[in-house]
Length: 415
Image (cartoon, rainbow, N blue to C red):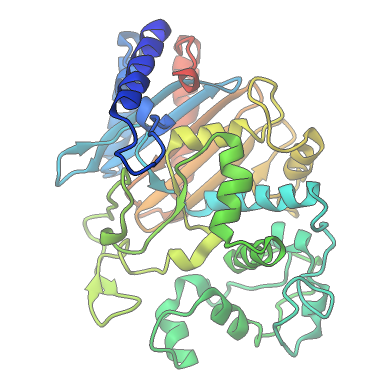
């Protein structure tokens, strides 16, 4: 199979070379990993029951489509799309279909910060605010903001509260309270939220905070001098071999080439659009996803996401983009009282987890101590919200028990 795939790739490259550069001096296009891998590469008769179990799971939860990628020891051994990427157009999900990754984006942002640590551009103790802080231009009255460090933001210990609701998912409310006619920019969000007092002294507790990772995105921009998306693509994703990650748009018209369509549950009510007087399906204009930036705006495929994980896991098969010491730094913290860096859980047994969800998607990365990594991203949100990741984790547990020993000995990264 591998020899045949290599022959096909050579033929494609030869055809591309023969076509030239369209006469304008442009670069020749070589197939990306998203284009090279298809459902047929993981079509094995002995794993039909695995496919049936995934299909049944999606039907049970009214999920239109999902993408699954499985690695073993940094080799991509299985990658498949299930259901529809675009039901109305009759387009099936493929392993290379791009999907909104929600809070999985935080793992990407944290890796960007760690890259800056290694390049001596900042430290974990670097202040975020104040005269010596990275974001020194902002003003506030609560002097506890001077205590916030980069590490506090990474570990959700900055002192920000979501008890009244997550402000990054309350765009209409923010516009009303702040007298805005358009959705606020990241800078406007920060300027206004800094008028609030912190809920606790930075470092003395923790509360999950999308706003904290929005601030990290701004820190990356300020330190690098580049837009957040450009820096992460150049210094993180491309170095990991991932060329097709992008920040999401809010509406269906903003879909990227190769990106899935998104769906909600049948009984989900229409909501006010963030930037016009219309009512919309919640996953298309109900939230300002683009404004989440490094907290939740990335779009990518499960196969490229697997490649990214393989580049930050300290395994030898794929060269990491960060040092072993940095991997240990990101995955330390085996307590409910402290978050790891970017990951949402890293337990003492060596199991690492990252989840993500909002309207229209749910994502789970689970890297196991035995070297297997299972990744699933859906294009439909569940009525369980972020808790649906636990149901996906339960599916992984059942599938691993039945099929781990039957997974093929192949590496789709090498196609």
